[in-house]
Image (tube, rainbow, N blue to C red):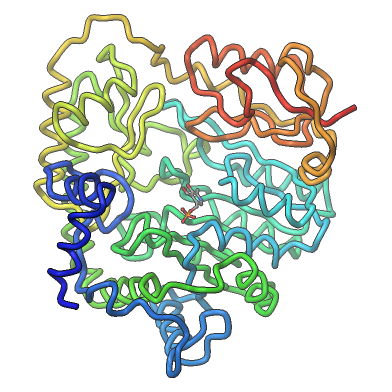
Length: 488
Ligand SMILES: Cc1ncc(COP(=O)(O)O)c(C=O)c1O
């Protein structure tokens, strides 16, 4: 069927494709959000024409021996890893498989508290004991780096730790000292897994901090779709050491990934790898120049403030990925959400997210000079205005800093989740064991996880967030101030 027939049929029958997705694509909204391709197509055929499964002559992702094995080898060669696995279920599936393969069932995982939920889910599925590393807090009011000294202390106190899981860079672009943490892990004979979901682009330019593969991590998970020109859900899992059983890794990947891996997604990975190999360097040069010009101009803003690593101590922020542009409301009088709405409604600039006091613009090598120009002009305009009204939420970045504390463990996540539960008013829950996650989102660092004892301090922190209108998520009946706990 010729392309135009297919699209005409869809036009008459799909309000979702037609009136939402296609209309959105044809308007002038500029994407400072994921995916990293920024809706700019690489050379790619009609998706229907290449949407096949493992038919004769084609390879099976779960037992790759032919074209997919070769394609994965090309990805490994580009990044300089020992082996790369294609992921079609996002970094989520890579994190689940990496933790499952690297840590024995009922083993102990040392993990950064600001980990993606997939790490907590892996701990649940594999019945792991979890020990946490709290990130530092920066003056800007974002979670900072994990301190190697805290890692060293935990390894000394708990020799039973089987492995370490760190997110670097974070959603905000903050990196930890992976080299030092890898050395500590290896001296303890434990593997280091790095969630580099937000850092698949780091390896391609010296403008960015070093990527985890260069720093000695054993397993590294990268979402290609977040920062490179690749379709949503695509990611890579790299193995970079002998400490990992690759057969176990492949086994877990076949459990956590679909049994019908999409050739469309895998072709998109192949195309992205080819593009980065052939054109990545040149494209990165142009992009990093644009970024650098943007930051130069942003330094002249008087009220708004754009985050730079130099504003934090090395301890609070070991490194920052400047592709994640964090724009604080500064002294404008706006809240993060109001800044986000102004950029969206007045300027048609779609940001990635808004927090209490800043917005995040995610950039990539597919961004255009016009896109950067629109962003800086919009910020200059907002910067000139004075917003005299009282913000609907406080924008003080320091308010949330004190609420994160190391938890009081009661039982493991899996023990808590697999037991009967009861629902209590928050006030009556002190001393009980939570069966739910409690997050402040963003930034998504849990205040409590299943298995942790609910304390007076924790409830005060929740009340403080609620008073300030900061979004508490997780408990299914939080609107009525109720929480599920493990039945006594
Ligand atoms: C830090 C981090 N790790 C992992 C993931 C999961 O990535 P994916 O969407 O590719 O499954 C995310 C997603 O937002 C994330 O922010």
